Amino acid sequence: MKTSILAVALIALAGPALAQAHSQTPSASPQSQGQMPMGQMMRGGGMMQGHGTQAAPAQAGSQSEATKAYAAAMDKMHAPMAQGIQDANADVAFVKGMIPHHQGAIDMAKVALQYGKDEQTKKWATDVIREQEREIGEMRAWLKAKGAE
Image (cartoon, rainbow, N blue to C red; front, side, top):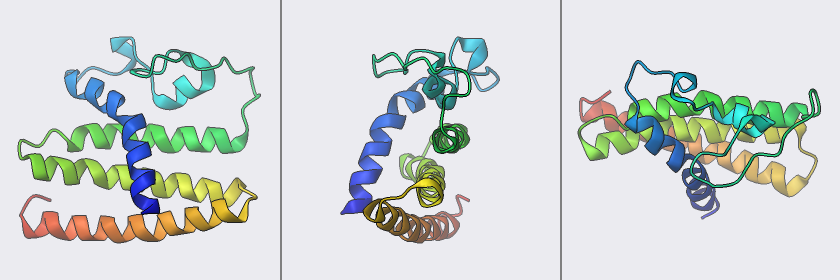
């Protein structure tokens, strides 16, 4: 249940970026399209694509190390997710997109464990790591069984 809520929240945040990435040509970079990585948006670099809210401008060096680490995890996740959903088979596209999505959740949970102080947050982060790693394993095995690795 907790993992499902986190997955829904992350999909809601990533969905508009994925849709936009899907519409781009493969050779175009986000910057050449007038777009920027999520981490740059979080650092005050522009409008949050698809959310209609302006990211608060950050003073140089005012971001916490945790915020920088979360942004890096999100930036690392988006391109592989966008690539994964390119498969013509809708089921395979879903699984290939969800693997990096789950890895992004794991990477963010590790940031929470590194920088967080709240015991409940740390418990959720630990649960996310365990469950998302399990699901990634299942998804990779499914892709292998389907010959769609």
